[in-house]
Image (cartoon, rainbow, N blue to C red; front, side):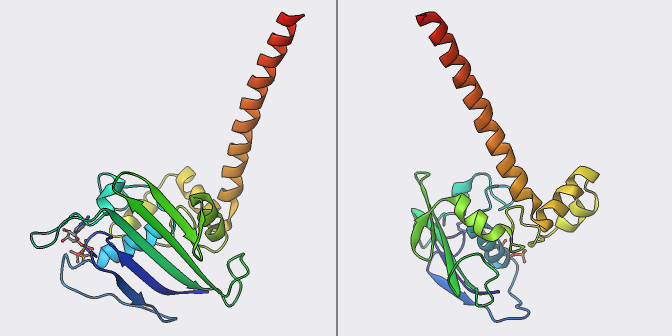
Amino acid sequence: MHLKTLTLRGFKSFASATTLHLEPGITCVVGPNGSGKSNVVDALSWVMGEQGAKTLRGGNMADVIFAGTSSRPPLGRAEVSLTIDNADGALPIEYSEVTISRTLFRNGGSEYAINGSSCRLLDIQDLLSDSGLGREMHVIVGQGRLDSVLSASPEERRGFIEEAAGVLKHRKRKEKALRKLEAMAANLARVSDLTTEIR
Ligand code: ATP
């Protein structure tokens, strides 16, 4: 599995559609300060499901949409697509090439797609979760991030290891199932009250 192309459209400083072609091996992005190198990495995190505006170095999620310059008006949407070579079947999907896309509209709406078919954020997170490209994004170590990993508490470190081992996905599912069970128990109690009242 390797990342093949990353296309940004209206994402941060990338107002026009820009496609980066990545080859297997090491890719270096070079450029002057403020030219958008970190924005490329932000786009990678974002398309893989990042939900934290702060992690993307913004105040809120709409900050990822091109905000305009003196010569170009702001845009109404940001769109990023990532194509992954899946010839080795590392991703649990029957395609040798997988494109995941994420779009955010300025009115707050968002869309996700896998190979052009609309899907939920959860589907993208599930698809990537066993591949090492997890939701917590430990595969992307940003500037200053190493410090925070080194000074993490034992609980936080356990979280990193669980993410890498693929345990986190099941823990989240368990938490979700438990919340559903609690809601179900509350509904059952309510039904039982009503039945008693009717009798
Ligand atoms: P450095 O080498 O200093 O870390 P860099 O090449 O990583 O810099 P980035 O941080 O990726 O640069 O890009 C910063 C630039 O992106 C700034 O000029 C900023 O104005 C621009 N930028 C960020 N968000 C937006 C946005 N929503 N709309 C337009 N431009 C944006």
